[in-house]
Amino acid sequence: MRAAPASLRLLPHLLLVLLLLSAVPNAVSMSTLKSCASSTACPALLSYTLYADLKLAELAALFAADPLAILAANAIDFAVPDPANRILPAGLPLRVPVPCACSDGIRKATSVRYVARAGDTLASVAASVYGGLTTPDWIRDSNGMPEDAALDAGTTLFVPLHCACFGGVDSGAPAVYLTYVVAEGDTVPAIARRFRTTGNDLMSVNDMATADVAAGDIIVVPLPGELSWIWFLALLGLDRCSA
Image 1 (cartoon, rainbow, N blue to C red):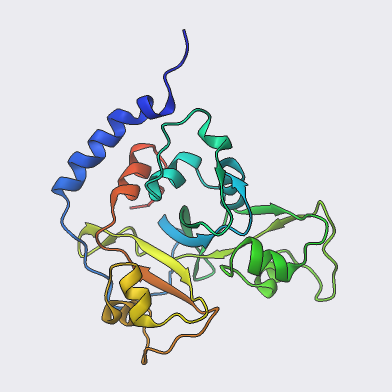
Image 2 (image 1 turned 120 degrees about the horizontal axis):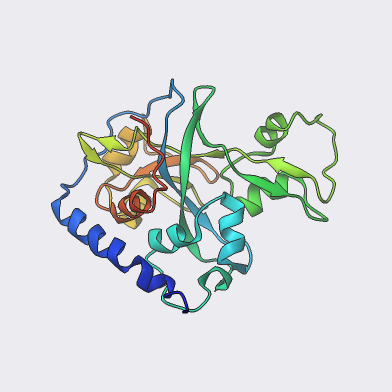
């Protein structure tokens, strides 16, 4: 007997998601951005724009993420045959769900590995492949590489990525935080409008004294009303929040 399509197998989970969401109040953003001091991990989102046409499975491998969780986080229909081989076009903005760990007092995604290709440099891996969510120096230090070391094709790199979460709850309700790399021309009001939050919340969460941002800055965006993906991860057993 043929297995049921993924969309049918997940239908009971999605129905339960809707029931849960109807009972969950809107979360209020954290008032300050805090450093971490324990080994706890919780689910977070990374804002990412595809640097090339990629299969869903290839994108998932870049971030050690679950393919169906990526589809759910972006409200992309997965009722298609073989969703893992679905081609996502270059330039597509996405939200990638990752477990955000506390390591050395810094929140970061810690399970990401990347195999270098011909022509790769640490700078291109950081800026292009991972969209500025990391830096060449951070990758170099995390892999114990000398400053002048070349990056050979086939080398497996550990790639730390900035992420943010606050134990998965905020004011007693589930909360989602998106790590966002500021683009050329971005302003705090424009970013707030794009993600349906407020400039005051953005400044408060990021402990900003002024509303000045520059291209390449990494900020945290509170998404208080967008909880469906976090419930989806929990239902699939992917929510790694610790008590």
